[in-house]
Amino acid sequence: MQIYPSDGVTRRTVTWDGMSAEIVQATRREKLEFRFHAPLHLLAVCDQGMRSEGETFVEGLPRSRLRDVTRKLTLVPAGHEYHEWHEPRVLTRIVYFYFDPAKMPSHSEAGVKPAPLAPRLFFEDAALSDTALKLKRLIENAASDSGPYFEALGTVLAHELVRLNAGASSVEVPAKGGLAPGSSARSLPTSRSISPRRYGSDRMDNFDPACLTLCSPDPQAIRPPDEKVNVLMVTLPTNFKVAKFDNEKGNVILRQLEKDIDAVRYDPGDGSKIELPVKLRGARLHFRAARQVVDAARRQLSLR
Image (tube, rainbow, N blue to C red; front, side):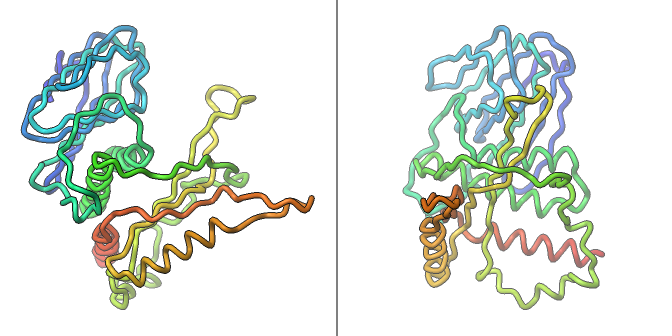
């Protein structure tokens, strides 16, 4: 990625097998220009972008002068030209993901029909954004032992990209509710707070990775209408996407769980039956991503 002026941004990059990610942060509000043309796929996630003037071009698509590009995604297939310039109203922050086409998941692994990667400009996709921003946070707080987790999330991101390109759709259900007073996602246990004496790596030896799956909850962040602009409420997740098994017996259980959850109705006290805003959906991810997470956890715990 060529950026002009080069001293107008800071760049932080992490690279692993077949993929790399880069956070580009503007340091002053002046015109910025971005150019890319390479034998790599590019996914651009605009984490923060509001421009008074600007234009974005992806080869094969009409140019766009959209001003508010926050949380917009852009996909540039390998060999296509990408050019963008900003007269920013806020300090621009973009996360770029570069994919080696030879290392992308096969369509059979992703469970979709073959389709060449097509350019997309300023689109939205909850699954891609969620995984991309998890990787961004990991880059910002990278530790020396985070490599396996990077690779696992990168695999999930690549699978979601292939599925999106093939036209696979996901079910979106508005989330309701919120965290209990005093609760915080930071209070949840992490791998660093787990005692190896209780959860040592040997405890995972009895688990067959083929019988494990990966479930991704989708919490929502909303701004309460009667609060100040700096108040943000993070609701509990109501959408759960779970990777399918290679073993059909496991998938039968997942499909039954999905049906049972859909059939649940709640009586609020007036005799009516209302549908609960909780959904479980099977994603066509290969269970390899789940196995990588398990293997990464085992390696981290064995170092303690």
